[in-house]
Length: 102
Image 1 (cartoon, one colour):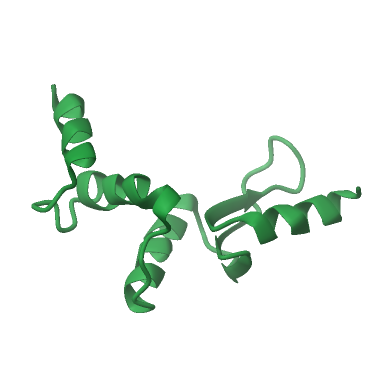
Image 2 (cartoon, rainbow, N blue to C red):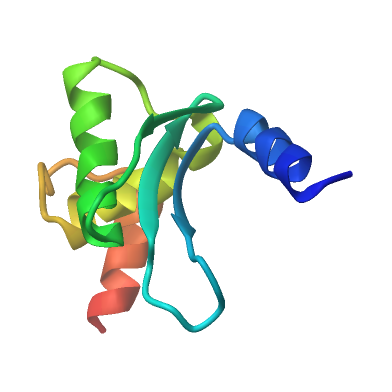
């Protein structure tokens, strides 16, 4: 398998993801983007923080539900780290928040 084929296969298998590409090892990020359901929906973003914000903006604006396998991860990022709608946490997210604040 070539590198391009491997990359394409990886993208197609990705439910939700943020990617970072570099020209060579040790060089600053050359591309940051967002993948949703196997499609690169945003690219050439400035940094990973912006890409993370865009993921949540896309889920909100497209009225999408979090994928079940990422539900708690995305909930913790949204409600604990970003403090958006932090009053309604699932039991798992609340337990993690309590442990983090101890």
